[in-house]
Image (cartoon, rainbow, N blue to C red):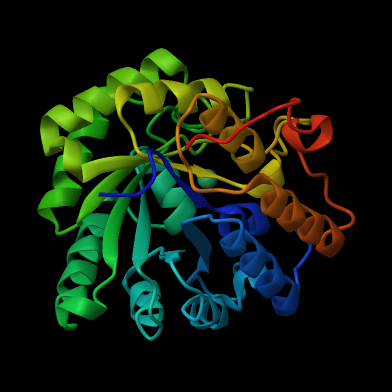
Length: 310
Ligand code: ZN
C-alpha cells in the first residue's frame, strides 16, 4: 500500500521530450531528474528504448535508468515499443516497463508497424523474457491501452474493444494495464465509464493508472474523474512540455504542477513538496529556454496560507 493517496508518475522526460525537436543534453536531464526526485515525485518515466534514429531525443535512456537507480525511493519507468526494446531495457534495471498497445489498429500500424495479433505476440515474448530473470530483478510489466479514448485516424473507439484488449494483454502476461488518452479526446464521463468497464473485466488491482493529455483542455477534469472513481496513479509532465501541434496553446500531458496543486488542496497526499517542485521547473526552463512551459500554479503561486495535505 502506498504512503500516498495518489501517486504522480512524471512522464516529461519521455513523453514531453520526445515531442519536441530540441535534444536536452544528458547532464541537464540528470539535473532535472534529480530535482524531480528531490521534490518527492515517486515515479519518473525517464525515457524510451526506441532506436536513436527514430527518437534521438531519448537516445540516452539507458544512462538515465542507470543514474535514476542511484536515487532513493524512486520508481523508474521506461517505455518499450517491442521485444527488442524490452531486451535493451532489461540490460538496465527499470522498475516498470510499459508497452503502448494502440486500441486503434490503424494507429498501431502507423505507429509501430504492427497489427494487434503481432503486438500481442510481442507482449507474450516480453512477458516470457521477464520471467527468465530472478523475481527481485523483474520490472513490473504494464500494457498501456493507447488511443483508448479516441484516435486521430479511426475517430471514436469502441469501449468493448478497449475491454477485450485489456483482457488479452493480461492473458498475454502483463502485470497490469493502463488507460491512455493518447490524443486528448476523452471527457470525464468517458473516463469513469471506461475505468469501471475495464475493472469489471480484469479486476480493480490490474488497472490503477491513467495517462492523460490536455489537448482539448479536459486534462484536469479527466484526472479528477479518474481519481474520484478510484484510480491511484496519474501520469503528468512538468510544465506540460511537448504541447500539441494540432492544438496551439494546449500543453502536452496534464501539467504536474497544477495536478499536484489540485490534489493537495483537495486533501489528497502526493508526497510532493511545492518549493522543490518549482525549483525543478526552474531547472527545466533553464535547460529548454526556447520551449514554452505551461501551467497556472507556478505563475500564480500558492494561495496565501496554503497547506499541503497531511
Ligand atoms: Zn502520451
